[in-house]
Length: 272
Image (tube, rainbow, N blue to C red; front, side, top):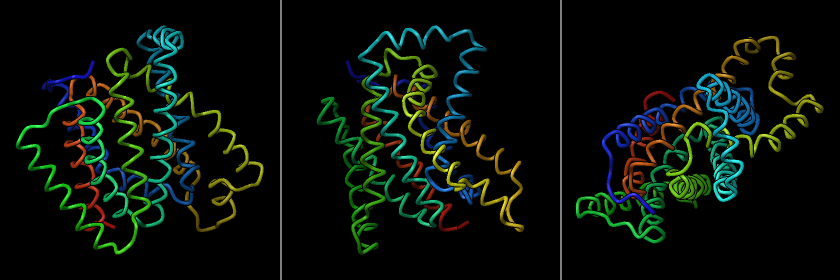
């Protein structure tokens, strides 16, 4: 059953996680020479590590066993994990390739996708004020897309994958602990990602190999610390997002999603 009202605590968590996401380009631009998928490997694996440590400290590892027994929740979380990995990969690629604006446009389109899914799939309602905001959002996206003068593949991929991720998380949020849910999500995709990283290691193609052969390169301990930090930085807002999903309508989650890309565009314009 979908949430039909917005809880103040959930709204505060939602706003906070999108503000954090808005400043992500500043951090991920420092992860070069790691490629987009290599960054995702570290985000997922270290994120899983931090989730398990947090669950162990709070003596909540039993929640993972309960989730594994819930096959319905398990496959939904696996799907969410796959969607977020695609989203992460495209996003990090865009930032590292200097296309931060394309990424921001994707997250401007994303709220429209999320609100549409809320209306069509969950039968949610929007207020007159939200309808006005939605119309302005559509107009802004049209202007941004026309300004690019090309099909925004990166933007559309980001919008669709995170819109579907929001729908899946909303569907399962009520019966899943946010921290345990994130552990299952990352555990579901980690084997594939580690397999890719093993390939990079065997072919001497990791960022650490690049640093070792580049006399003017980045210090590898600093690079490793930044990659480990990416895992923690990834999990914190996603756990906040999962908690917010419990107490917000999908439509409200969609409107909140304008915060992230707005900040990303400001970062792209004034810093990059």
